[in-house]
Length: 349
Image 1 (cartoon, one colour):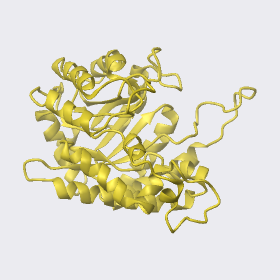
Image 2 (cartoon, helix red, strand yellow; image 1 turned 90 degrees about the vertical axis):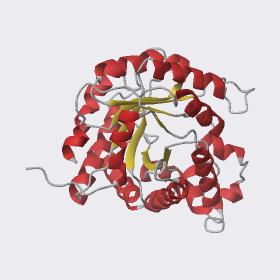
Image 3 (cartoon, helix red, strand yellow; image 1 turned 90 degrees about the horizontal axis):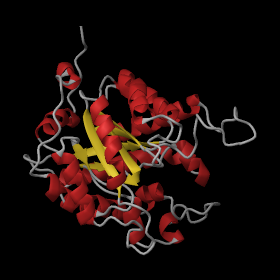
Image 4 (spheres, rainbow, N blue to C red; image 1 turned 120 degrees about the horizontal axis):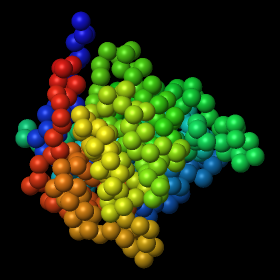
């Protein structure tokens, strides 16, 4: 007999995704860059004497400039985002060790989730709830690929180190008010498996289960993630986690991502599909550094929706509130992708 699962706000998501396409927010880093922050802004008073440079450690801003992160979240919510990601892409102890701040990973995740939670609560209405996605990024280390071309067996991180870092992150994200978890920008499936193991471990220990989105990244026209798997192989490697949605993000703009979203929709007919591409190809002359304007990105994602491929859409690198607003307007009239069987979250409810 199944144990009852405590109610969480995120349990409303399956019903929403069956009825309409949900909008995810856009890039955090792109928006942080617009503030033109200095080293002193990143340090604040608390870290003014820290021994390493801290500029570009965006996750630290949740502690030193929470007003900036709050402003970015609210910008996306004002443009119609249903789901916003916490400012925690690089907030594992493994990633923060590069700045000698690994010991603050838990605090970063906790405070980031609280900032996002407050923003969502401010914009939520009875007919349009807003959701916090606790973001778990890939870390700058890979468990599958050697960092030394002369030693194929060499690794700079272990599965256990990844699991422990992701467990700490998951616990803090949920404690801070996340409604769902998002394991994203997966370039190494073994890293992702460590994250999924940690998430499931937390679910077992806490007695509650939040919806989960898993999002890989196809790095080039080969159609494979960096550790070598095709989109189909990637799905079969992670489907045991029974995610709310499986998808792709980053690396490619919408124009180049289309065949891989089509493939994913074909091999995962019983799971919702998410897609949040970057804003096209690198373009140093563009304000965002990419070549797809809000209108172009919105038009392409509208085509995805019209083809019945997606349930969640948003933006990654280079996307702004203007992109998200244009995407929302473009897909709003269209139906969400239908599943082929009863979704497992309904069985658990």
